[in-house]
Length: 129
Length: 114
Image 1 (cartoon, rainbow over the protein chains, first blue to last red):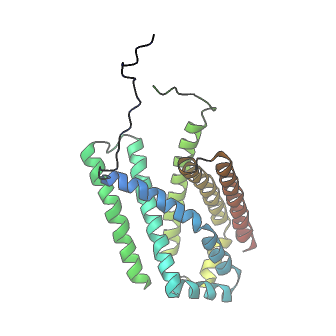
Image 2 (image 1 turned 120 degrees about the vertical axis):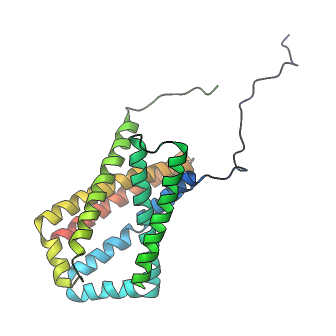
């Protein structure tokens, strides 16, 4: 008869939700979110490229669309997504060649990704507005 | 213990590398475009003249091809992580490929019309 009292080895499940996501983790999830945003913006980008290259009036119309308040807001959102994705991507490439993989430097570079992309977005956003 | 089943033909490494190579292509293109546009206000004539150049079409074609591959790997990862219903995931992955290939075709049409 099998020993029914013996404890079965159960798979472990760690509840990670009480932990705060560290800055590199935040860079990572926003890398993904910004990537999806850029994917969704693809059609709008191509539409504007088509419009702006087709004719003089199309070029003016594309400018009008981008100067419309909603157009500006969407453009600034896309600019942020692009800058964050680019900065996080460059950071990723350095990590791939073992540059900055230490805990301290990884945290600092993650912070720099947020800082640089947000500052550039604000700078470009102010100039666009 | 988790029993791992190893499948596939090392496409993981290929995609990993493709993601990085395409990222570099797009990075270089972005910097080149900023240099090309940074000389002053852009008019319709200068905008059209820029894209009418053969090297610019070639570079933009490489950029578009990179976007196609890069976005495919990225979006496939997203579908794999969040959509666990196989049929649904297959449908979304197929739609992503069709959409990206369609967009690449559209981009080529725009460029060679100039």
